[in-house]
Amino acid sequence: MLSNDILNALKSYTQNMTNKVSLVLQTGEQEKRSELKAFLTQLCSVSDNLSLVERDENLRSPITFYLEVEGKNNGIHFSGIPSGHEFNSLILAILQSSGTELKLDKTLRGMIEKIQEKLHFEVFISLSCHNCPDVVQSLNQFALLNDQVSSEMIDGGLFQELIEERNIQGVPSVY
Image (cartoon, rainbow, N blue to C red):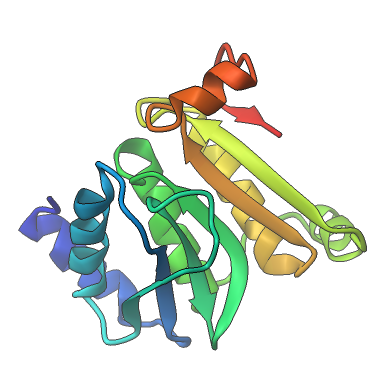
C-alpha cells in the first residue's frame, strides 16, 4: 500500500517524535476495515513511537480511528482511509501530536485556546479534493490546542448514507 520511498521518508520524519502516538482503531466488521488496518500497520512500522491499537470505543464505524497521546484521545479522528490528499493530514496530525510545533497565527491560536464549550467538527472530504486537507489540518490543530475541540475527517465516498442524509453537494463540507 505504501511504497518503500514513502516509508523511508516517514522514517526520517518520525525520528524527532517526542511523544508516543497510538492510532486507536474501532473494532468491528466493515468491508474496507482490513485495508485500513493494513495501511495503519504499515504506517506504524516506521517508528517505535507509533502503535496501532484496536479497541471498542463506540466510534462512528469500524473504519474510524483516533490519535491517542499519553493514553488520552487528543480529539483528532479519521473515518475512512486517509490516503490521497488526506495522507498529509494524517502525517501532520501524528507529527503535531508528538510535539512538532503548530504553525498558527497568534491571534487565532488565542481565540481557539479560549473556547470553553465542547465543539466537534465533522469534515466531509473526497480523497481527490485539493482544498479538503487545508480544512482538515486546521481543525486538527484546533483540537490539539484545546481539549474542548475535536475534529473528524469523514471520507464521503465511504459514508454515502451520511452524504445523502445531509444532502451534501460538495466538499469540503464542515458540520
